[in-house]
Length: 245
Image 1 (cartoon, rainbow, N blue to C red):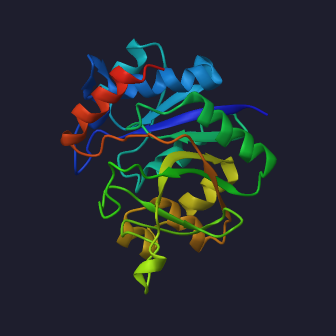
Image 2: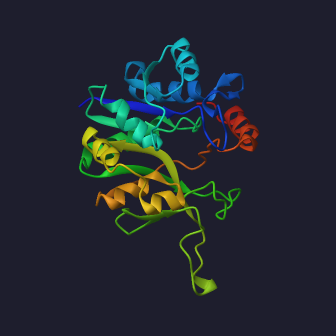
């Protein structure tokens, strides 16, 4: 089975335009992510899916492959689904272009989980650290059952509680590594719109719940940091200095 990493990268982000090209310690963020993905699956199996020639040019200059997609993709997963139609592979691993601290071992862990449970969507999660605020809307919190299947994901601090003594000691957060088959991606795109919950939370994995797809959550290493807003850049640069891959 051929596994590839597909990295969606959109220039016109509403919260942070041009985010994939932001410099982290002098290197574009999208290149950081591509190089870490290369360590997991090999350079020949890494693709960046983008609608923007500026991103494509930076990626190609760094020696990686690109797939040009339309500018009207609803989400990164829709962009992935479009790009996947041009790639001959069995498993498509989505690594977000704003996760420059992704661990290659976690990419392989997600891939292996998909191989072992091909009918499920695979997504990563980790525990929030003491320095992360569960009330931050920039952090999707994960609710799953005791079989590690996704029940819901929210930007609110979930799970809730009635009695303070039952308040969660720690919260789980989404880690943006996913694994799909081409059929999974096709079904997602053919839905044709954002689902109501997906639109409300702005969390695209929720669309799979409307498709009655089981989403299996796989624990990854703690300490992942995404660049969501300009204020995250200095935190991520400090982490890159202290945790070289």
